Length: 206
Image (tube, rainbow, N blue to C red; front, side):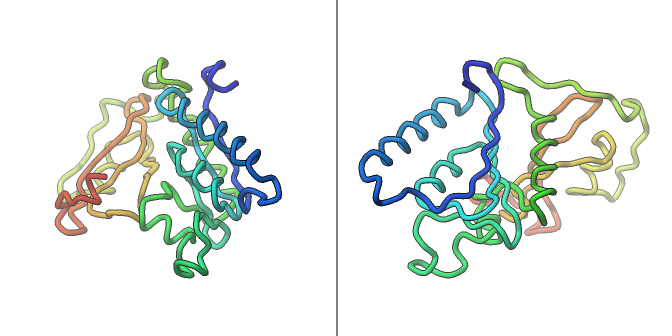
């Protein structure tokens, strides 16, 4: 339905996975779900919010979304149970460090606020192009950039100093995120000289 209407999808994930009692039918259902997520990829934005346990095939579905928001102390995202492969696997901190989580919020309210901001920055579908919002800064304003680098430089240049960072806990030598410049929504990728001199690493390239 979202593909038909060219609208974004926001998924709230809180599931311990498939019920073994449902047998093959649940695998068929999950196959249909994963197929729809794959078809929507690149067509409409898909944002996953992990509000509780997200395990098994539900975790696979969430990982296929474009952006994933986890909640500190609340989110659990794993395919194999942590007691099998390590107790730290699946926590918000772990998924942020591996890049599986795009953003980590302190509360569910903050997570949903970030999703609202993301939906306001992203186009509704691949045909819309860059979204132009309200211009809240003078596009011709003078900006003192001497001595600034990384996040400080980005915030000095973008509208209202608002930079919505993605992947903050992963490969910190690189910065990526969304902002508005002259009201136009754009993605930013920058070196972060505060970590490893901003050198481009394999993880940073990802």
